[in-house]
Length: 362
Length: 185
Image (cartoon, rainbow over all chains, first blue to last red; front, side):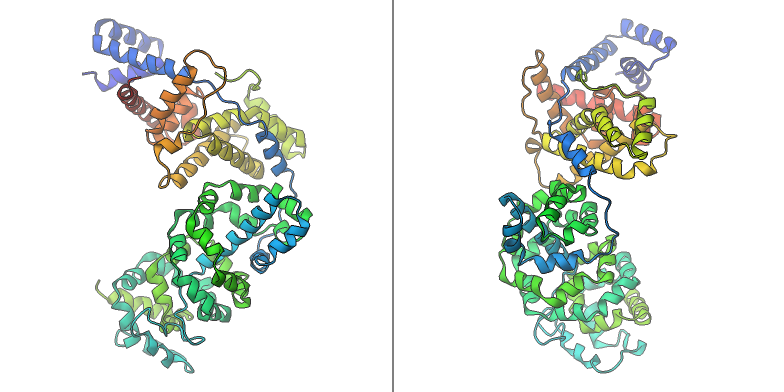
């Protein structure tokens, strides 16, 4: 059995990294030890085999693609209303592009890109509205007991309400998954996030949650599958996607020139070429969702568009913890409770809630 | 090992091209692509075992390089920087496809055209064996055997100590040896 230093000596010799003295020691070892000789021969055989592998030439168009991407003008500053625009165009894009864009391929790519932007937005904001009357979040059957949430309507919730004795809070903490979630560090981080509180206070957010289209989408199997897919998570976290949001060309996609510019745009191409995007395109749930009427209704919903242009929403979208929590089923259940929404809009109530949560044994 | 038309990269040439690019010379970008695209493409190809993915990674890396060239610190070697990006992008690509693709799917390198004797067979055997290794192991082997980097250069690219490069390389070789033997190579 070769010793570690002997193995290292042989490897270093193969790599040409031995000193003259070490090389002499290597030669001596090989000469007297058959096992070392066999090992050395094996490594050399492998090196020869690897040396036989010939270098491949990259595709001839690659250089031009790289340089084309480079030739695009500098990006507009972030924080534009691209998402709002993209969503608003979802239903128009085929008609407009049919006239404006020269190739069929461009139409497909353009439509898909806009749909992707929109769907990712839906996912990042994604949790069920609970259904029923406008604003009666949790009025459905997603969590037993949250119907009482309406008791906070018309009066301000106070810290005195945020106790373990409060039945609305009790019912939340009785749900193991919710309890684990609210006791997690990620969730605490989210609840202390100002952008999150702003979003919770958004009227557009409330309206979206109350919309029938949203409820249908959230309840659909396709949507659930999509949310669980790695491709979606990858895409939502994709740097190219976020960069694309800042693109002037994306906002002006209705002209053919803008579309051509967009297609030559590095971030856009990066996104289109990403493995996540390709997986997404092959995803059955994605295709199903694209054909879903409720989804189209949601995309055309003014409150939803407003939400997607919301600064707080965009900030949260860049937050890793937020994205992780959004994919959590318990979080979607929690969001269905009006009590929680009321609490999460206030710094003090949020802190009180987290304190109460930490007192509960799992 | 490199094809004849690939220009030879040197630190001085790199620095000069970077300076020219930052000075607004578009031709410098084309020269940098000429200099590195084949090397990066092949590094990515050996890391990923897939032509299309290697192409994507190469394009992504150049995009990032040109975007971030303003922040590049010339006291470090340019090639270490650009190779590091390629390794990292390749690792990211591997993570993305991890749960969805089998080994058979991963290895998607069409047979080369006219090659030296045994080259296609070697590529197939080595490609399969490499793809069976952990990406970290694969990275050191590829940088050593396909890019011909020294221990120190590998350490610079991977940002790990030289002693870690050595231990990882030797262990990776051992695993490769066993894998190839199991394949009957």
